[in-house]
Length: 312
Image (tube, rainbow, N blue to C red; front, side, top):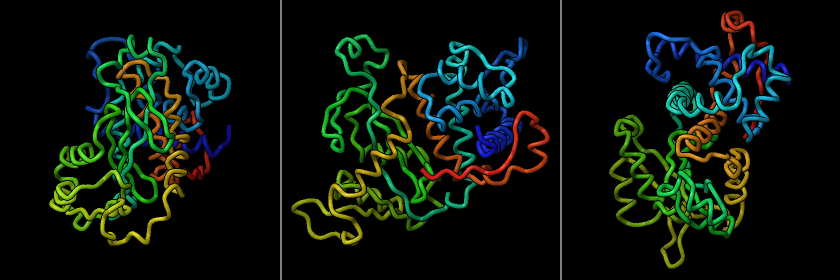
């Protein structure tokens, strides 16, 4: 465990602690009278981020590693069932902190976005499909980049060119990518009002005259490769030949997110694990990772110093 990672944890802990004081509604509901949790919500967020960033897909293995190497950061660590329960209840907290961190970055105002989707496989055997709590939400779908069918969900992600997540949605595997994108934009009507002339880069699946007209009404210009049988589209020369870097980048991103090994068995479990990974993608691009101030470090004696450089 390096000082660099300790500093990243310090910055997130201090930021999460401040945000929870400013926005107490982000914290999971608890009765006003009762025993306070020994692991604070800010510590839980930090622990969840570090798990995703260090690539631990097993909660039990992660907690064993934390007990062996992170006692100077977390004097108290729960058992796996308690950690799992807290994490599932903290999905809204993770989402709120991720959004606030993202909006405080310089690249949040970027006028170019990229949109794509990637599979979140949830089971392979027929017995799993029949018995899973995800049945009804998870579906059979096809992944062109892997040339195979899968059973599970699909993560739709809008991000900046620097890789900062802007918006995301988890849907069934058969959900139409275009409809999901329009739903994401409609869910936050104020999102685009201050972004006139936004450019959106997508693949060939984001097509259709009515679809592009609706994007234009939102003030978005779509750039995508030309489909077979279409007239040459503006900007087509900017795209590399098919099967080049786009699919490689998508596989790299999926590997960094560990979506193939999320181990979620319930809707709440899958959502929490995806939120962990999106927070881990957001944090290295947030100013909080490079400027932990002296007061924050002093307030949290559990953590130490020097920024982590992480390229995803």
